[in-house]
Image (cartoon, rainbow, N blue to C red; front, side):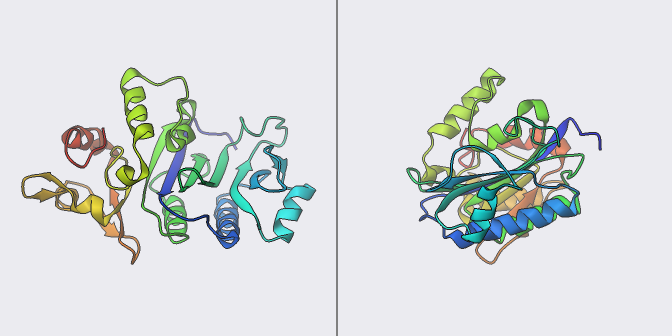
Length: 259
């Protein structure tokens, strides 16, 4: 299959949380493997962080992977699952699908980052919506977002809060603001407006102008939808591609936008 020049991406965040149990990493692995397989994506490599694991990517067919399954993901603080071309000798750089779940002890942050070439999974499809719903159900996330981006822009860098060296001055300033914000601020405000915005009650109840909350604003915008995702107060605000830039401009400088 010829690969697309764009990828669909999803990021989910949780702050001020304890180290997740090994069961979460097991469920993440099972969920991703099943969803990827349904889209025709076969996992080829994996990486794991934790005692007894190296920081290098290994083949799914290797002993390290078998050991992780045998020990039921015990001791992990992070896992990465990748799909690469058969001839790949640099799996960290040529994957066309990747999924990472990583816990950062110093920030008490849990982050899920999934990026899939749109030849296999496009934004705004049942497959992408299934990915979103399956991952949202895995944990009590604070918020998240989904979008489509060119491969060249390395969408995983955006989710991870990293500079890919190709940012405009405006994009770099936005990244720096996000990077500098502590977790308690990030969970209250929007980083940006995306096609898929996974929002919590605090964000939705924030006033963007006198007498107008973000919830009321989201529900009143043409072509948008706001639906409840979980019983724990997470909602999905979907924004048409043609409206993203306009709504970003409207919300920029308001009390709900971090930038």
